[in-house]
Image (cartoon, rainbow, N blue to C red; front, side):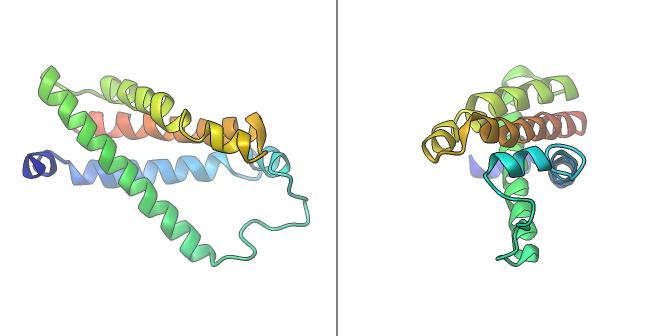
Length: 145
C-alpha cells in the first residue's frame, strides 16, 4: 500500500505547494499584516526581536521541512480522495484542504494556546495562516493532478 501511495504523489505539486505556503506565511506574518498584532498578543514588546535567541536559518529550514511534510500528507489524502472519487480538481483539492485545515489543523492547538495563556487571538492568527496554507496546498496539488 505504501508503494501505491507514493507512486501517486506528484512531487512537483508537493514542492510547489510547499513554496506557496511558505510565501503565504511570509505575507501573513509580515510587518504590514498580522505580525504586529500577533507579536503583541504573544505578550512581546516592540524591543524584543523574534528569534533573537535562535539561529534563524535553522528556524526557517525547520519551517520549510514542516510545510513539505504537510504538503506531502495532504497529497496522500488527496490521492485517496481521487482514487475513491475518480477525479481531483483545484476546487476539490482546496475544499479538502479547508476540511483538513479546520477539522484537524485548527482544532488541535486550541487547547494548547488557551491553557498556555496565549488566548484566542494568538490561536486565531496562527491557525488562520495554517488553514489558508492547507487550502492553497490543496488547490495547487489538485490543479496539478
